[in-house]
Length: 294
Image (tube, rainbow, N blue to C red):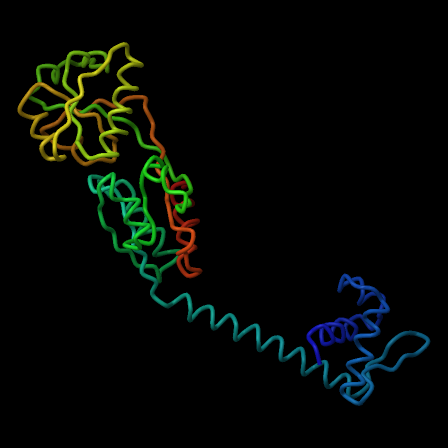
């Protein structure tokens, strides 16, 4: 007794017509008739009486039909219950993001979104440097990363989807002579030092961004790389200088800083290792895309 035979029988019992059953099953009438004949041979009794006016279920056929329909309904209810049990199982999602980001930009909304749509998802966030974050994913330290698309450029095993974009921000100390100027623009910083961090890929890509942004405003910047982010911040506060950061970075919201938004935008994506993605964690991707679309 095969599933095809049972499906053919059920549809034929509902239509009492092999031709109509074949249409619903996207099959031919002879094929449906053959399936039912094989089922009758297997069972050892007739399921239908074939009359001039059409088909009529035998008493045995009617009993079998009611049994199979109840089985289908019970099975559907069991599957739904099993899905509910699965959905109640806590799924821990390990997320890596850039360490300097202020998660208030999206974390509160994310909590609300998932508590309504995926309450079984629990999150563990870890901060990484610009050069570490992609490696954290490929080394299985996290399940997903939220980072600049640039972070994933040299990693073909990382799949990604865009989430949003962040703006470039010029940040300087409130003690800087330019800080009190009301109509500050990018061009005002042509004689300033741009501090960044000497961190391999970070320095290379950050310097490229700074240079590109400055050249759009008619000058080549003086870029000075520091050994750490805190050193760059100290340099900015203690001397004439400026940092070019993105508007998710926490420093530009400090009361000791003044920030000027620029027109530059940089894509932020969600990334995952295509060989490590599990079915229970896969919905996190589309939920994050939906969250940022909202």
